[in-house]
Length: 367
Image (cartoon, rainbow, N blue to C red; front, side, top):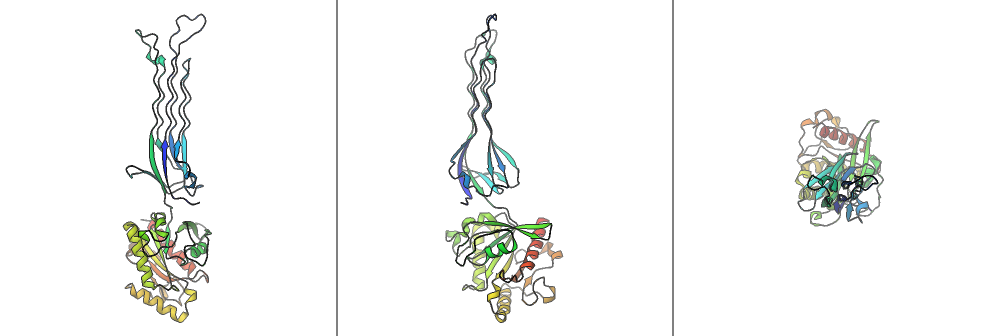
């Protein structure tokens, strides 16, 4: 089961109590106090691990505790310290204070470790309290209590490009075509129930990460459908690829306006990110209708189709792209970087949008 949000109570270990003891040996007269100190309580740490991909292993663990320190013993022996508790989480996990809503940690890099709660100190044994006027102290310190906090863990996947579209628009098909992701694909809405990540390779040495989330429908920000629930997973992305279905019963303008409205209702920051538009299922539209459909859509957005000789896409189809790859440093983020018809079934323009998206990713990484 995929889980992206859990609530936990976390406690560090209590320090062990100091010991009250006196030296008692043959031939040793009036042995003094020799009670040892209690051991320190265990700390709580968070660790980011690439081998973990969900928070589901916390589902039934409502209270996570570090070990307590052991009590001190006679002969000035210090008690054993409690073992630290390391909480393993996937990259992209935020640790949020339940009471204040403050983000305490944002764990994004593999191997990143953060100390969360310190264990309580062990109590001092009675040997610390001897003095010329009190040569037989009969008391020792109790150990300090550990800290306890109520937290929420939220997983926000880390990707370069996030796919946004209505259900059954071809998002899962695209990510399975261009990357190593293997999502479930079927001919009904809301086939995708959980977010998926895929690595898109560009040549032998370059790549970027693409995220697919469940489809978004009108009214999603009011709780309709599934997609808005998972939009947190593309909050970290700097690029959105809106996928608009050429063969849908919904008008192209209606699709893009609804999607952008739902994104803006969820996050102003996400809505202001760089974006591009892929017009999917171009293979099911008759060639004579495709050109007019795409041209009309580009014009509707107050843009002009790019001249054929400048395109990185297939020359027999209309398209729009802002600038060539080496001129993208100042492009207008309020306009799509490109608009292009694609077909995952026939591979039409698939390689072209991979490279166009990679150009956009490189541009954002350079900033």
